[in-house]
Image 1 (spheres, rainbow, N blue to C red):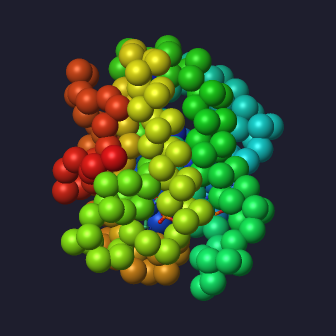
Image 2: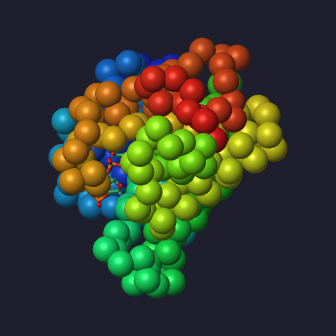
Length: 237
Ligand code: NAP
């Protein structure tokens, strides 16, 4: 971690592996003091050492964990410049759509949506102490109604009703907060299909997957808010 006290401060959730780890690594490489958070302290510490960040334990489904992490950042830095809400799960993908049950949805929403809001609420006071606060909510093209209805995409957006609904919820939550909190830039990044545990190893590199997140995180003051983009450009809602 940088010892430069004027360095900007970032926090990434779900950063012990995959896109979150790559995001933390690139922010640290770009001169940020990065809090790399994870629910496993063993994996998180190893990841933080590799990425050049500082580990903080944070489970997005736990009030205690999230607010304790916010207290740690407050004591260490007094403010936060960039929050990357990245931690996510797919939940079950069932062969027979008749087999989806309510608890499938509850589990996914508690992490992907309620968890994002919990983290935003806990870190908002610290973001509001920044001169240029930014939140990047990591979503997915699977949360786009337009992509779902685009027949040229040939079913690529069908088959994950629970996960896709959670990502659509993140998208709407983002545009609402971007309007309600005009002093904070809040955007949605779509990594695209990226080779991680979540995708079963399919897709492009984690470097490519983190590109849109990094672009929003590092966008100069006056940059966009309330937008949805992948590394290839704007994603339709
Ligand atoms: P991944 O490698 O499976 O990483 C997911 C991360 O989220 C892990 O660090 C995991 O921690 C963490 N996590 C899960 N539940 C958590 C909780 N309750 N509290 C804190 N952390 C939790 O997946 P990924 O592909 O990098 O996914 C990162 C984000 O990108 C997700 O939001 C995902 O929806 C999104 N995305 C991914 C793709 C893709 O193709 N990979 C495409 C579009 C969007 P553990 O190690 O403890 O499980």
